[in-house]
Length: 210
Image (cartoon, rainbow, N blue to C red):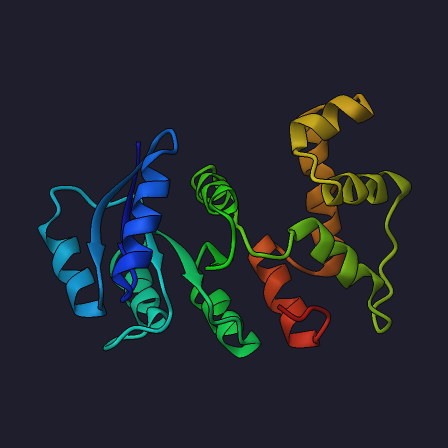
């Protein structure tokens, strides 16, 4: 079970999100908070640390950015998904540097929020812009000269089509491990070691605009 603590200062949004997530298999909203103060009080009162904090950015006391920074220092194992209407690139860049696990707009459909939660729990990161498309944009940036093999380009293209590693492996008749190896090689060629580093790199270079 994925236990979530939801932080947002709008009662109706919290209520609607809690109901929507409650209908998803394996997801349970164990606590809600309308402010940073309420969040940390709720966190302290829970018998077990939640799997994930679902945070808004704009709150009446502490900002979601401040909460995320404190969580990374005091609760490093807790996953953090930002769910906000705030999409300023400077804010997203700061959040990636803190090390949040994902960002989804409040305007996203419930299905995308659930997909983001599951992706993060499975060890990935989730941002509104697909990581595969981001790799493509970085590789195509005029100031970069990155040579990718035909197979690496195939994998990026298939990821951009929404295919997961297992589907790509089946289509190309290779193993999932080989797919992961190609991804590692792509990151190495870019001088980047993770999807999060890729996001920060692209934001700083102005390659993407969220």
